[in-house]
Structure formats: structure tokens, C-alpha cells
Image 1: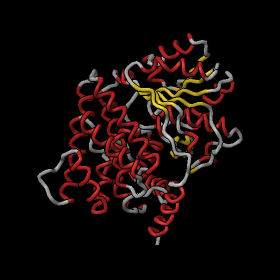
Image 2 (image 1 turned 30 degrees about the vertical axis):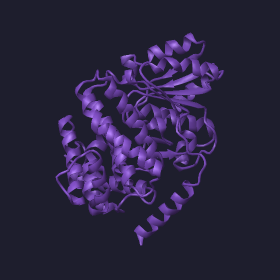
Image 3 (image 1 turned 45 degrees about the horizontal axis):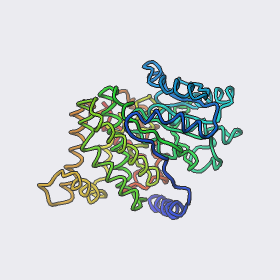
Image 4 (image 1 turned 90 degrees about the vertical axis):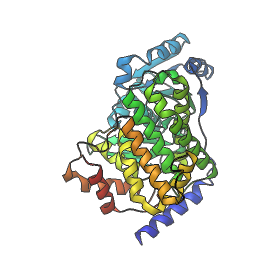
Length: 400
């Protein structure tokens, strides 16, 4: 009965969402040194004050300074908020919002990985709905008013936040991590400049790349696909299998970096419409409670959840295996699917990512599984509905 209720909810959501006219992708500004084009775009829109949201790591490296200089040279005042933590909190949003208001800003630039983008989207949501708290915008379509111009500049190739309608935020008091989803949060522009990813440490290249793969795979195996999300997922999977380890081995390989940015964008476009699944629900619970980086969590969790889905995804994973030419010696879908999962684990090993996650307390697992189940059910159109007890088993499997 529980599974039937979830499936009914998902069918209604798909019926409605397939008829919503607001689906769009950000306008892409792509190529090496494409970041230089941004100040002129802001200038043409007559905007005089912008807020740039980033994080302490980027600030310490000074990756954003050149852009800030270009913006100011164009006669635009640029205020920087650089305190976004790895799993951005509601407090981050409120601090950045205060700066936005203090400096009379009219646009927001998200510069960094998924965390600054989520924080920037949260600021946009609060500007659009000044009388609403973030907690009251949790879930689907609780904003429904235009936010300020939002420009996303990813410095990693993985989160896909530059193209999604989601802001994933953490309540720093309860440690619960949840999403605010609304079409208005999709950035208007996404600047995909591979030069910005050149200096990424190897472990971040690996984790964010596997994050993108998780997005593409979860979208592909879910039950809310469209022809476009299938195409985007397949394209992303191909690009990741061909380029992620190249970018990992040689950070100066700009072609691989550029293709990984494209893969991240496509995977983000796929899952923002087709949704994700239990990998993300589990990762969000761990990020909120322990601060485990989202990309790392997804990379580790992905093969365990695919195993748990079992026969419900053999056909889909066999299709992906054929696409990337894995398990060609097998004829049966199950064998091909298992070869695909084995290759994910092998990719993690080759890039130095762990097989399990440290720091998960056994006493917390019941609470974590409850949060994951609450996030995923009934919203996520997963291949197989799992309840809290089944999710608890996965937490024990991934726990170091």
C-alpha cells in the first residue's frame, strides 16, 4: 500500500510537471576565458550593484579576484560574501542576504561549487519572498515569484547546480539538510570556463566528477524521464567515462576539463527534471549531520544503492554499460549491470576515493535513515521504493 501511494504521487507529479511551461536551461557562456564576457553582460542590463557569493577556500586562493576587478572596471559595484560552508546553512543565507540589502544589490553571482550556488539561490529566494523563512520554502514551488538576476559560475565539474531548480540547505540547529525547489531558482546564465577548474586538487576533481555521474545515472534509472532527460543523461555518462580520469590524471588537460563541465551541466539538466534518488537522500543526511562533502558521499554511496535496487535496474544499467562499452563479453542484462556497477567501484579506487565513509555513528543511523526516507518518499521516482529499514542497511554497508 505504501509503495502504491508513492507511485500514485509520482505519476501525478510527472503528469503535472510534463505540462508546466516553465522548464528552461540557463543561457550558457562557454569556452576558455569566457569569464571575461560576464561584466559586459551585467553592464548591458543596467545593473549597478551585485553580490558575489563564494566560499573561504576560493577566497583564500583568490580565484574570484580577477572577476571582481573586471566587474568594478565596468563601473559596477561588487560586494563579496565568502563565508559559505561546505554544506551551506540558513545562517549563511541570512548573512549574505544582509549584505545584499545593505549594498542595494540587484543581481547575484554564485562563484564556486554547489555550496555557493545553493547559498546564492537561498538569497534569491529570500529576496523574492522577504516575509518567508527558508524553512517555509522547503519542498516544491513555495517561492513562485521572480528572484534577482542569478548568474552561476562553477569552479568544479560535478554539482550541476548551475542548471538546476534546487537549493539544498542545512538547518545548522537540527543538522537537517533539505531542498528548496522552484523554477525561479534556475540561474539565468551559466559561465562554463574550464580555466577555473585547472587548479582543482585531484581528490576534488574525482569526487565532483563522480557526483556528476551520480546525477546522470539516478536521472536515467528513475521513472520520470523524458526524451530530453534521457538524451542529457546518456551524453553526460559518455563524457564522464571518457574524460573524468583524464582530468584527474592531468589537471592541465583543458579539453577534458571543458568536457567535464559540459557533462556536469547536462547531468544537472537531466536530474532537475527527472529527479535523483536514494543516493542523494542518504548523502544529504550525512552532509547535514556530519558535514561530509556531497560529491564524496555520492561517489561512495552510488554503487551500494545500485546494488540495493537489484533487478529493478538491470535493463537500464545494461543499456548504460553498452553505451560506454563495459561488459561487452556478457549477453545477459544482469551481468552487464553488475559490470557497470563494478566499473564505478573501480573508477573510485583508481582515483583514490574510499569504499566506505568514516564518522557515521551507529546510534545515528535510525535518525539518518528516517531523514533520507522523508526526503525521498514519495517525491523521488526511484526504480524501487525502499522504506527506512532498507535504507538503514545501506548506512551500515557504507559505514567504515
